Length: 281
Ligand code: ASP
View 1 (cartoon, rainbow, N blue to C red):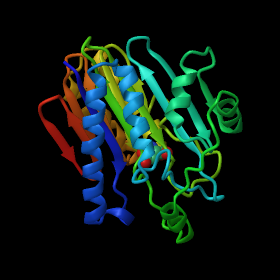
View 2 (cartoon, rainbow, N blue to C red; view 1 turned 135 degrees about the vertical axis):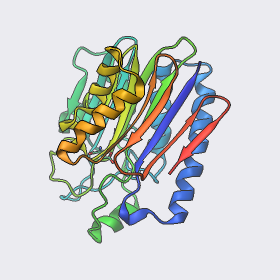
View 3 (cartoon, protein in one colour; view 1 turned 45 degrees about the vertical axis):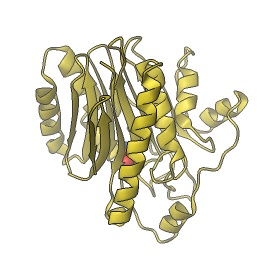
View 4 (tube, helix red, strand yellow; view 1 turned 60 degrees about the horizontal axis):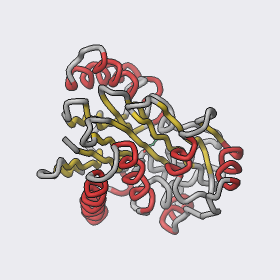
């Protein structure tokens, strides 16, 4: 039954060149392989964290290393994980200077206070052994200096089902790029990342649209209430049109059906079920 699907956000207009596309396809393939290997001996919950940490470590994506720079020159990241079995979500919003925000989100899953934001999230991480790490890359500084606003160019996420049929979702982002400091992304909300025993979903796109459309939570709830996967996606994306929404989502349901839909055809994602790869970008 073990399967997983990962995403690397959308290509933006500033980086749709063929070489970046190829690099992302190769990277997705490597991360899928490693994560699938990991899933053989770990739960879906552990695997989505592992996969997202690998995506955060690759500067090609807008999460962890390579996160986009905000309007004040600072990088702030958000990440969340949700275990479909326990239905506990934990996350960080606008955390700074840590290598893997998803690991801080994981750490918080054991706490009563499970979602922390801003400087206090950073301080909490520091006090709990997450060392200072600058995630800024030359490429992102260059983009920032050229003021190339590149909306939605590579948030990352993973959804997995393990051998026991348990589901989990994890999502991590550096935000939209050039946003007003304090702006909150969808990634550490139930709109951007949600899971239960029926379905798990991770989103990418414009956070404001995803939150307005309550995308991940709606898809999961619809599946839970008896919708088929394609109908749940179809209705949710239809409703997103009211806000002219820019979004994409990946999902797996309890029967192991893998699904993806995007409002614009430039989403980067890949799935692997142990036999067949599907890489799209
Ligand atoms: N959803 C992210 C945000 O709005 C951006 C993205 O997915 O690329 O912050």
